[in-house]
Image (cartoon, rainbow, N blue to C red; front, side, top):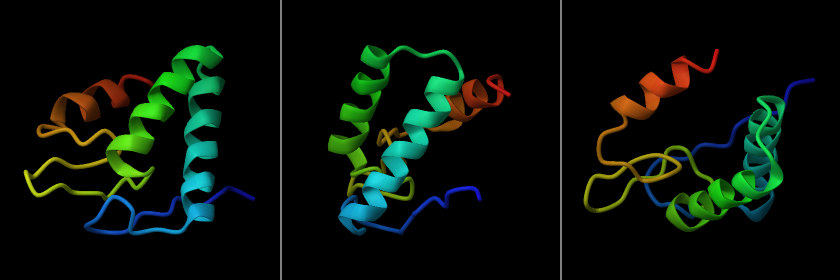
Length: 84
């Protein structure tokens, strides 16, 4: 059974701790499966925890969005498509 993303609109911390942990494990698994080592994975997870609380639908008052609170996500989406 595939795990489910927990994504809630608006605030970064608009989710439970178990939902955040689930999302963090999914991110870890995805990066690990692509050959990432533990230190870079931890760096990315640390950033995502601070920026969005692991909520992919988090938004800031400045209009930043997503796990890493980027203002222009088009480059990240473009890069992500190249990972398939």
